[in-house]
Length: 266
Ligand SMILES: NC(=O)C1=CN([C@@H]2O[C@H](COP(=O)(O)OP(=O)(O)OC[C@H]3O[C@@H](n4cnc5c(N)ncnc54)[C@H](OP(=O)(O)O)[C@@H]3O)[C@@H](O)[C@H]2O)C=CC1
Ligand SMILES: O=C(O)C1=N[C@H](C(=O)O)C[C@H](O)C1
Image 1 (tube, rainbow, N blue to C red):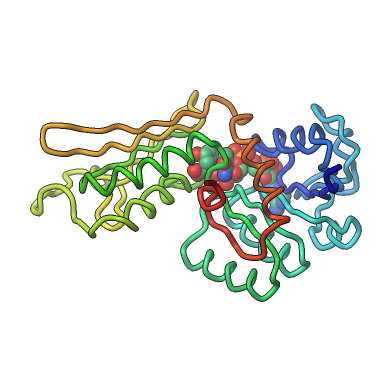
Image 2 (spheres, helix red, strand yellow):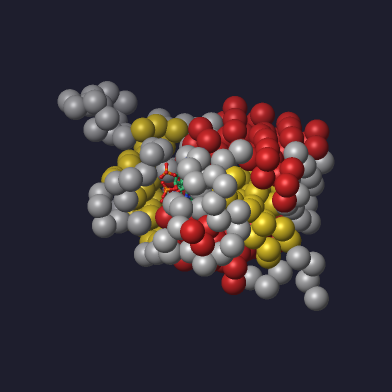
């Protein structure tokens, strides 16, 4: 029998948090011991509409950790809060599995250092969907053969961060295997600021935000007389949950910070 993993979820009422609560309830070897929210402290989840779990709601993460002694924190909140929660989890010896996006390179460095000090596992995954991870891996492969690439990431209009975590991670993976290149015409000018999108190491990233969308990305490579498009679509948030389950299980087996689930896959 698999050992039970005691889980706390931060952001349980959110679009992702709700799916994660379902996942924790449906997974035999996960036990949802508490949730962290900035509202409804002192109540239990089942007091809120749409929940059946009896997990207690804590407004204070430290109180939650002290009372429930969890193995893993799943954070699905907002960029600023997610960073605070991740630090706190590491300080309390709780393994963070972070889906929250919007972390900078220096945030990641700091969290890596803290993880090293603590010697416990931590996972920061800009995208938990297997298809999105493959899209990133395939993009890295293609970048060895195509120097020019632009990334279009498309999300719902409630998203706080741009570019998306997935868009950033894709750009980083591509940049890791290609010569740095300033793309487009050297004398190009933007008649409207932002027309050419954001830039990472010469790679252009375009962020589209529209109601109706969930999470989509197209990586377009251009070469002489040809183009290659690698696209992934998440049509619902259940698409992320097998990756969340995998990440929680993996976090228990490692003692470093892993940024991106592709690093834990064959
Ligand atoms: N890695 C991945 O595969 C994926 C990552 N994401 C990322 O996950 C994060 C959450 O996304 P999503 O669920 O769509 O966002 P939502 O806005 O739906 O959910 C965020 C939740 O966090 C809550 N919250 C805000 N402040 C706190 C706090 N201090 N403590 C606890 N909870 C708090 C919000 O409450 P309230 O509404 O009351 O403010 C809300 O319920 C985002 O960063 C997103 O980019 C999303 C999808 C996939
Ligand atoms: O906010 C979202 O919805 C998503 N955020 C993640 C990101 O920023 O890449 C993952 C996925 O794209 C959905």
